[in-house]
Amino acid sequence: MGNYYQKEIETASREEIVKIQNEKIVKQVKHVYENVPYYRNLMDQKGVTPDDIKSIDDIKKLPFLTKDDLREAYPYGLMGTDIKNCVRIQSTSGTTGKRVVAFYTQKDIDMWEECCARAIVAAGGTQEDVVQVCYGYGLFTGGPGLNGGSHKVGCLTLPMSSGNTDRQIQFMMDLSATILCCTPSYAAYIGESLAEKGYKPEDNKLKAGIFGAEPWTEEMRQNIEKSLGIKAYDIYGLTETSGPGVAFECEEQTGMHINEDHFYAEIIDPKTGEVLPEGEKGELVFTSLDKEGFPLLRYRTKDICILSRKKCSCGRTHVKMSKPLGRSDDMMIIRGVNVFPSQIETVLLNEGYTPNYQIEVDRVNNTDTFDIYVEFSAEMFSDKVSDIQIREQNLKAAMRSMLGIGPKIHLVAPKTIARSEGKAVRVIDKRKLH
Image (cartoon, rainbow, N blue to C red; front, side):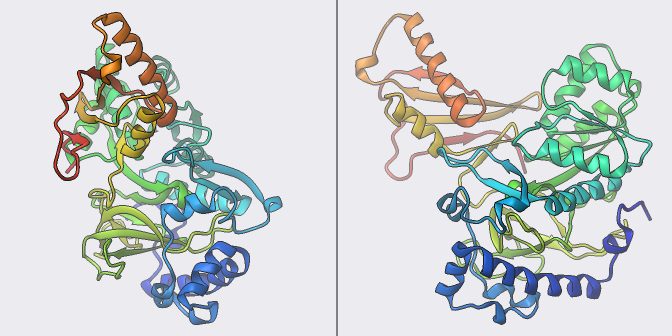
């Protein structure tokens, strides 16, 4: 069945995959121990040496890495090789100031782009295709990853970046784009915009879409498939492990195949850190088996999901992960951007407000709405509506600069946001994501 970008590895037997993982993990742990003092220190504290790691089964002896470690080691503390070997960084919007900065050697970029190429071929991509990439470019991994993958497959690549929907539609129609890569909410928006311009789903040449970077439901998938006349495929990744292409959907659309020759996945109990048996729901942990620039071992993603080794009709043998079923922390993903309540609090305090606020997220017409209700302090009480509007605008600008996304700000009278005895209910998320 199906087409593969690298058939031999994508359909390799379990034994072959384990053999590759065994060889790579032994080499990688040694490499990290010798080149990353931060992680060597964690291993020493745990009393583990590279000699203790003889196969992939021994991985559970290694210490975890968390987002906090990344913050503490920022910027260069987890770099796995000399700066002269690194050719690029990518970065996420991190919490409160410190971002995740990942380093890439040329070999890392080739590997990442190959993973994205596998995803494009799994969605039916060939050299004949025209791939329109409307993920953001620059520091964000979405654009560069799919762009590179599309080049590797040999597709004609339209490096559109996000936004400017009129231009997106012009290029899509004039150049007969066949594969669309963007966030699911933007795909839905393009579908609506096409309909508003009087186009029917059969008027475009699109056959497939590769959508990721934010949670989306089966209902939303069907909605997008109908409005664009395509088959919609999910893709997963995170900057810490390279970017999109860590896992991708095949035509079966029942979960995403993890590229197990490069990334080893475990599911753990988020409270105890204990590795759970296959089929159990828990926190996803990734180890980069052969990355050089930013080689993370046992990185806790905070994504809750399930792994499955059920035989897949597409012929690929790599383990599948379900869509992430939630987060083990309080992070929200709004329009593809990571937003933490702690960031919002930081802005409020910097701007002289009390941290009495409530965040309301909803999804209207397939686009996330993002409202923040903030109490003004007694000193700020002003009946002039124009003053309040100016304050709201200023606060919105400050939020946008911290979060990379602009919420609608509502300043409300003191004491009007409900106080809670225990943990304040800061976030009301009305989106139906499950």
